[in-house]
Length: 478
Image 1: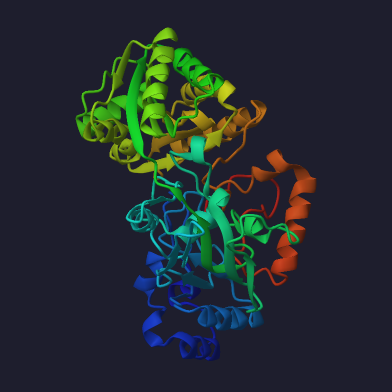
Image 2 (image 1 turned 180 degrees about the horizontal axis):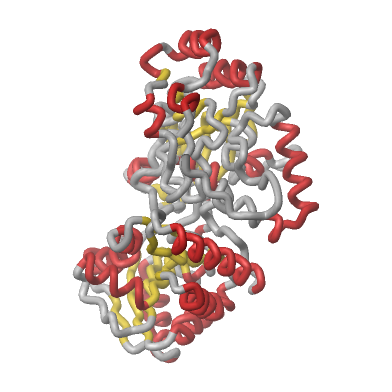
């Protein structure tokens, strides 16, 4: 780590101007304070910022961006740092804009079924607040007890309920945002229908902080489902599990949750959580349905029948909400359990059409064996979104090189099967070199033109989304 990054490099006059905006207590630039913001939840990647600023009003964000834009200072916007694509690692130094003080639920509108929040609201806190009113915000990323709503929107986060309810962008109705110039704009609102010009709300969802800073959001709510039931099915064959997924959807049943764990993941989870899983099985499906009680009972009964018809060795339907929660605990414990095994856990997400699910799982197993690396796979079977998770040690450079090769081949396999390199984690720094393989050079050129229109001085989260040179996996470790 070089000396100028250890000491920071904001000019004294710039530092004075920024402190004048937020005060000394919300301007952090000691070595220890900056180190805390030099990484996110993505292993391997790290870079030191020059300062961390904690605004709490839109006016403050506007002034900070004006100063940064004037002096061409990079700005990386961040919430809780649960990003899994190195999207909030400040690779160009500059300012980390910590939005966690934007933590108010401004309004729950029961008449229009909307909630207006600031971006620093923790996702699970939003769930709790609206459910207390008999309402429902479906997006539930795995990090929801820590992640913020603004980060969810920036990455267009998904979650376990994505099959039935969609992802974050499907609930984004309006927002307030600040351009790098400091100009404050609004897009969308509470209207169910709104086609006045380009859809800026959808454009900013998934933009990963590369275009603007979001300071307020209006989200769609649904009535809270009347009932829910949970079941688990265990299989001796991956193909049987995949066919169950296909047949359930073909039967016009859309479960709220349809999760997959392979045998390796089941064994680690059971050792960790002591759930009594049948670890001799090759795969398990965890399925939850919600809605009117009569419909839920009918659907769960039919899904259980289909699972048995497709070769499920064992089917277990929860008889109480507590038993259902225990079943889902297997899936929610997966990452925590796997993280205990080796010093470095790399969680990826490759998505394919659900009809190619079995092929993709088989490809992951083949690739892991080819490169002699340990990969456990779990994920959202209902929408084809798999999380191949590699257990490794970043200090072992030779093994890490094989891990890099394995993931590249996994991404190529997903594309070959009609899938995508990311279903919900985003591109960030970790996958920027693979984006041209999916969208083509023309697609990259168009995205860069949009970036140029918003951010002509390229201060917003530079180095993310677009590769700087020929395609290669870049590892930044200072």
